[in-house]
Image (cartoon, rainbow, N blue to C red):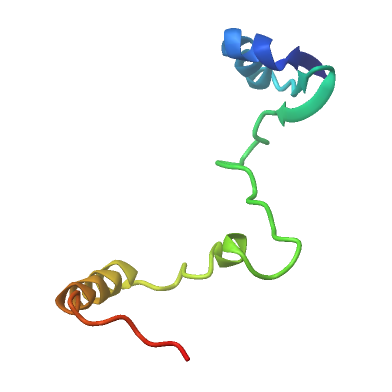
Length: 95
C-alpha cells in the first residue's frame, strides 16, 4: 500500500491516480497521520457503494428512497409552480 503526504498529492495528483489504475490503494497523510485513502474501484462496479447511515435520519437515509417515483420531475415542477402562485401569502403562524 502506497503512502503519500497531502501536499505531495496536491502537487502531483497523477501519481496517486496512476497507482489506483494499477490496483494499488494510496493512504493520504497529513502531518504523519492518515486522513484518507484513494483506492481503485473494484472490478465490475461502476461506482463504489454509498455510505450507510449509522442511525436512521439525515440525508443518507433518503438514498434510493425515490427510485420508483417515475413522475418525480413533473410532480416537483407542479409543486414549484403552485408555490410561485402563492408567493405573496403571509407565512404560517406557529403557536
